[in-house]
Image 1 (tube, one colour):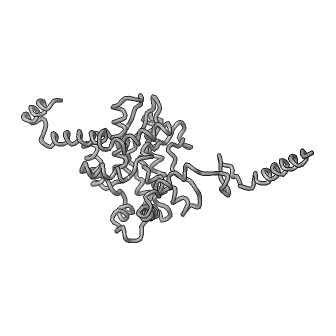
Image 2 (cartoon, rainbow, N blue to C red; image 1 turned 120 degrees about the vertical axis):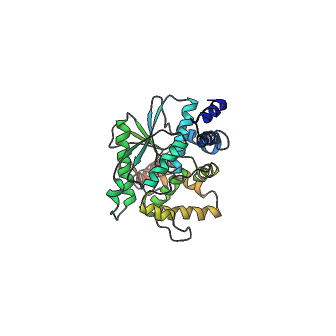
Image 3 (cartoon, rainbow, N blue to C red; image 1 turned 90 degrees about the vertical axis):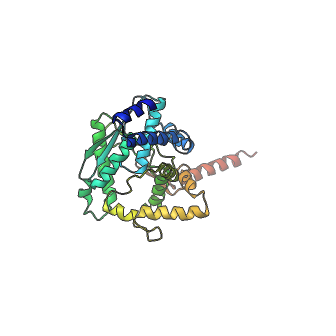
Length: 316
């Protein structure tokens, strides 16, 4: 629709000044992903898709929207990818209401309308189910929410769900696993579901930095959902100088402190997950089987001895 048509409809009362402003604002937001944030956000989104083969021809992907900055941005990136039409695939924008306060639900609906994201909502009572759980309520909540997302995505004919975990989520999870879990593991860019046949989880924001997401959000004057339950409200309201109210927040603060002295720390944590040398770790699991560094140690020593004996015997 051209500006002349819009002005005509404005005069007729079909388009309000607010509608006109929102359309121009949307154009600016979308244009920012093709210009200023193309290299830091959109190109990294595409790079992860290419590096890990996340989107294949004829995929139908449920883009899961929680209402936060990460998932809303991911929805816009998928729209931009479809606009370029490099890969024939379908998307369905799926949002679960686990028991949001009315203001939070309205915030998601407002942002979806502003950003032209056609969200399909479905309701659950996950928050009520985990409200009185004392041990790992966030883990249980995330697990339940993911199960509901898989179910509704599959019912909608999708074969994949896309989550908005970004670069910082990846390195924080890696460090948390080492410090609090006693193991080396990270969030994978894609995972086949063990409980939902034919379903796969993908993380196309794998390379996108949280700082760049925040810059995009703030520059476009967008306000996304910051918290959804009482526990995360407490986290959001916490003073950065106070003790961290969650282990993830504690790790986030630790990485920030280390990065202030050495800016390479976040990249080093990420690359450590790519540079695991199995010959110099004590134990590791592969396909559920535990391997010990001593398993092949004696065999290696025996081979060396046999080689040395052979060379001595060959001396005339």
